[in-house]
Length: 96
Image (cartoon, rainbow, N blue to C red):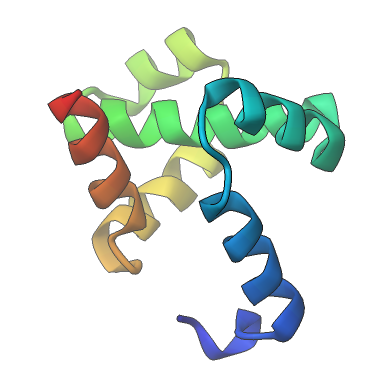
């Protein structure tokens, strides 16, 4: 884990997410944890990552998701140089 976010509070948050048993529990938790805009931003980034992995252009992604080119670029940077979290989740979602 990134040293900057390796704190007891972040560890507790990760443990909290891992203890959720289904989509309904996850929805309740994230609805309480995040604002509507935060939920939209998080889900938008995941959608952007998925589209980038599919080889979509920035223009296509911006039009479909409403994401700014700055957001698309940031997600692309994470895909290329990050911790592979997007890859892990997207691959697992596709296996479902």
